[in-house]
Length: 140
Image (cartoon, rainbow, N blue to C red):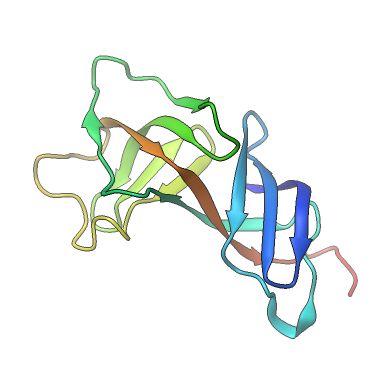
């Protein structure tokens, strides 16, 4: 996961198009300002994506459709997502090359109803991301 395009940036707000090489999503960035007054650049690696919802997140099991889905809804940030649980303790869901953390909504991880490999669906009012750092070949 990396920044494909910087849509907006100032020192307390950023919007990026994040790509996994196959799919793109628009994310609001949680990790600005960056340390040492560095600015985000295309190609910068994304550490994690987090869904934000205005209400409690509503996830539904869907093992009938074991395929990844990233569907942009009617607004700029809203997505309907379907992915596979890859870590129950940290509440991590894989959607193609994206890893989305639901730990803020499931602080104790997923309960025993959910298993690794299960497909779940949920809506995010927006996706937030946290940046990892500069690519190694970037001179700064």
